[in-house]
Length: 387
Image 1: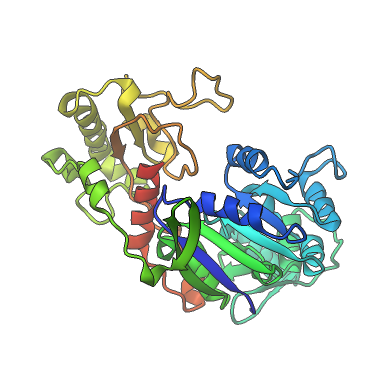
Image 2 (image 1 turned 120 degrees about the vertical axis):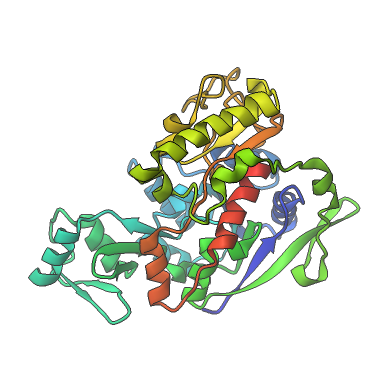
């Protein structure tokens, strides 16, 4: 890998996106950008605020009916592009080939999902191995041995393997990882996040020997600038004044290291403890703080929401909320990013303890990369509080 990725690792609200907008506004017009963000409202913000560039958004009406084909056409034409993580994650060999002939700068708002378990039954994996459809090297990388156009139920496995992005973990599960060579095809790469050391993308970079450096955003007058993170001291004093952490006995339900993890919720022996969590959550929100619904925000694993909620704070945001609904939910996903819709909420409950997926953990360990799960969990908590 040749490029050194610039990790803009600054606290939420310090001006990372403002710096990116300034960078794109002031760059020479022949320098082209691809801006990748988790949410559609940020797509619109980029299009509206950078008026000296004509940012294009991939559209199903332009590109053989798929957004991916539209993205490829925009790259081929050298357009400034703003798109979502979900679409960028679909990058295939054709898109990679297009980028190799282009001169783009990549700006990524928040880290993206760079590895994921591919849902295939263990028996099907063994069948593919024994039948010779796939071959696995010592590092776990999967090679597709059948004809590339061989029509099969396992077309997803075929496509990922042909792209050299598929690994077999412990002979029982496939893990896809985003094509790492993409990051070397841009003139410059910026990743805007906080606590990069607590993000899986950091360990993915270590795995693929992608070099990166840490920077912070600083504001001088009306201008934003980057400085090496080591030269910028973060001031947390204002946050200490704004955040009050509850440390009473109803928090004892989460004292054990694995408490509130997904396996903790799933374990039938913890049925009584889950009930206690439900009661304690209600007690915290309704009795300790006497909080009305419009001030409450809480989260847990979506599969266990109904086992934890009670009347008064069940409301979720609908898939297509009306203007009256926006920001009125009490429950939001723990991995929600890039939104200010809930800034009026001030009584928060974070009822989960996230560990890395064991298959993904084994994947990294097999490549001699150790994930810091404490930082991973802390990053989840801080991102959620700030959002």
